[in-house]
Image 1 (cartoon, one colour):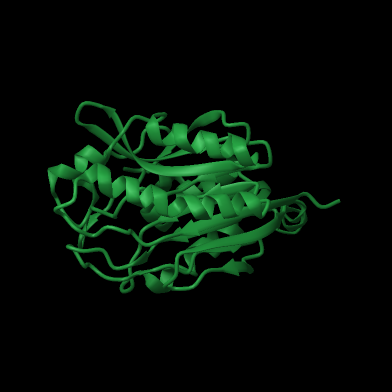
Image 2: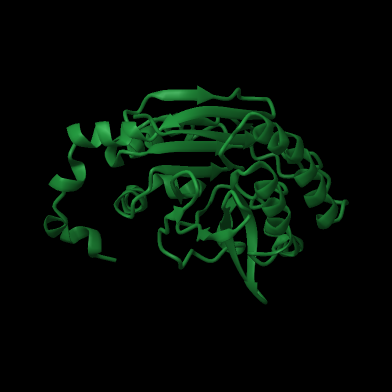
Length: 288
C-alpha cells in the first residue's frame, strides 16, 4: 500500500541587491517574494515544503560586514511565527531556514521545522561551516550543536542538512540511522568548482541511506558581492537515486513531487546497508 507524501521545494532570487537599503527592508522583500509560492504549494496540496538556505535575504557570506548580524533573529521568533500561520492555514509542514540569534553575539545557520497544525517542532543547526573562496561563514555562524535530529511531522519523519553539510557523508548517515524518511538540504551554491557534485553527492546519500532527498538552491546573481551565479536546479531524488522532479537554472520556481514512503521499505529490503554496516570496524571515524 502506497504512502504518498506530496512535497515541495522553493527556489528564489533575492529581490533587493542594494547595500544602501536597510537589512530589515531587504528581508521583508525576500519573504514577500516567497509568499506566492508558499500559497501555490498550499493550493497544490503540498504536505511538506522546504525553503532555501537563509531564505529571507541574500547569501551575505561573501562579505564580512557586521551589518548582517542584524539579519539574525530568535528561533522560534518573528519569521517562524509567520510561517506557523501558513502551515496551519494549508495543513502543511514547512522547513524554514533562517539566520538564528541564540543570544547576544552568538549566531547559527538554522532551519526551523513547523508541523502541519502550526506547531513548532524544533530546529537543526548547520554542523559544517566553510571558510573559503567567498564563503566566509565562520564570520557569521557557530557550528551547530544539536546533533542530527529527526522531526516526527504529521506526514513523515523529516531530517535537515544544510548546504556545505552535504559534502560530509557522516551526518547524512546519522540522519538515516536516526530514522529520516525525507531529508531536505537547503543550499546557496554557485556555478564553478562544486557544481558537478550537486547531482552526485545527494543522490548518493539517498541511495546509501535509503531515504528521499530534496535539494534546494537559490537562483540569480547577488550584488554587491557577485561571487557567481546561483544555478537553481533544485530537485527531488528517491532512495534508488532516481530524479523525480527538477527546477530550471534561472527561474523562481516551486518544485513538487509525490514521494511514496513504501519505496523506502522496498529498497531497504534489497540493500541492507544498516544491517551490514560495521561501526566497530571504523575506528578512524572517531579520530579528530
